[in-house]
Length: 557
Image 1 (spheres, rainbow, N blue to C red):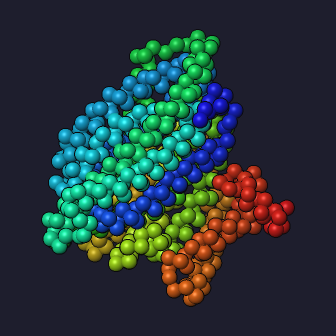
Image 2: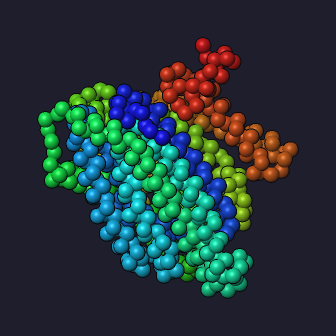
Image 3: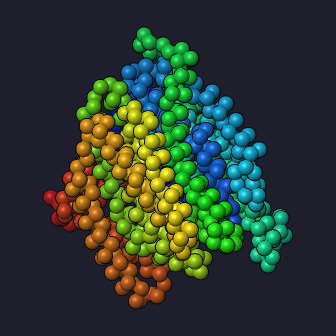
């Protein structure tokens, strides 16, 4: 368990490799999340998912305000100290951050627990209260993750994410079924609406408990990792020869000065989901005289199913952003702007090489993938697949805007992402109100606005990065060729899907060989069109193996 490279981690600065650790963990975690969503959906239903998601949205906002941005913010400020070899000050920042999250986490948890009726509708209040203690635990976990990320060591965070999701999945399904059984005496769906609501709420509470215990399990793992490495960490701090010693007043000023813009940026960046939830589940039913149960169920389809699927490929951009922050911040602090630009260019290109084909695949196979992962969704497959198709467009845009937001924070432009997010938020909110009031798009309107929001953010953040650091992204190999390869890949993979469907008339089975064909086909097309060179191909997840195979079949020399 000991991280032998924690002290000398500056030597290990392979950006894509470190991002891949986090990306693989993120993708595995989200796949686990998808796998348990199907049995969970069967247990608590779309109504239960709707209550869960409504509570989860407000839990997320309070979490963002208090703790969610901690890993990125801490990794930035500690990485700056490490770049200057101020190891004693780096450890002081770590200890100060712990004090900060203990105070803020306690206050935030109490606000969420006692203020739950102010945030969500009455039926979702018990669910939100179960989420409340998780915020306190998450803050401590975030500091530990950020500390190791600052040392450019992502394996600890990666492993903790997988542990978190495994425990989350197991407890969510088990507790949801147990809570329903204990309350209702049976797993059968009640005939009356009041009984259906009570059953859905209890199931959602069980799922919320899984989220909390998953975070606790991850914290235990990270705490053990830190204790195992603590001797080496303290030894390096004691041997620090730098003359500068920060006071704890300076430490807390630094923490607050950096963490606050991170928090505001992330909060504004994510608050649109809560605004959309409020508009759709509270105002929309009254505008169109619809049942609250129906709109909540539709929200469960959108966010509990379609958005969960679309979030899987976004894991790579989130991982790249987390890996890039300490590296770019370190280069900027040491005055090496060219190296910083090189890391930015590599990060953006690698992210697009993954995000563009993922979006194309999701768009092409929205319906079959929805049925594959949620077998009970056939009655609502048209609505779910339409939402997923709209969200597939946002995969690339969210990836690009997330990455550029982190780049701006890394180079000291902490407030720029906030202003950009506010502009995007205002425009998408106006559009959503118009679409819900004057069209019959229902929750599909929310999916459209999600893509619009992501697009505005992507454009504004990309322009801001170019202005701030004099950086210009290469376009053809980063965007054009991956888009061409993804288009051809989708056509051929869809052809495979239709052929298999003739032999086996089952969409869930037919889509699997189509996906298995699509992945290697995309890599081959990238090589044929020379969108990537040997070095770039090998840095991609699984790229070394793919390179070896392509060389054996003489597709590359």
